[in-house]
Image (tube, rainbow, N blue to C red; front, side, top):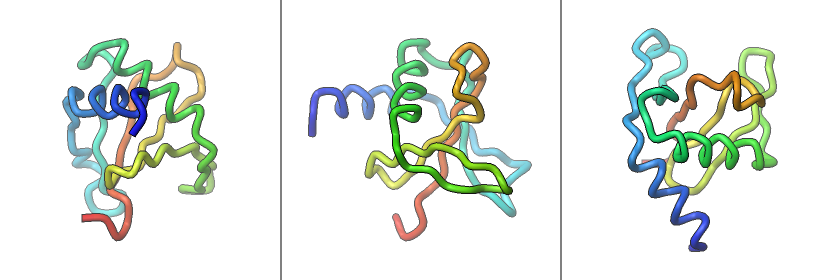
Length: 96
């Protein structure tokens, strides 16, 4: 595991993830709010998502996903850090 990946995983572990109750039935996932976490950690994860080449379609829209092999996939709703308010994560199918 590289130092960069270690730093990213440590940042993720420091974030306070909230379960998205309004999406529990059709798209269970968690989110972290920008103002509820360390800004360096938020930026690090945001930039890692943006650097990912993995793209999936959800609800007719293509999103870029980061899959760091921790059982989750991470995505944001914008590619503009100035507009990013939350980062989402969901369990990867087949992971425990």
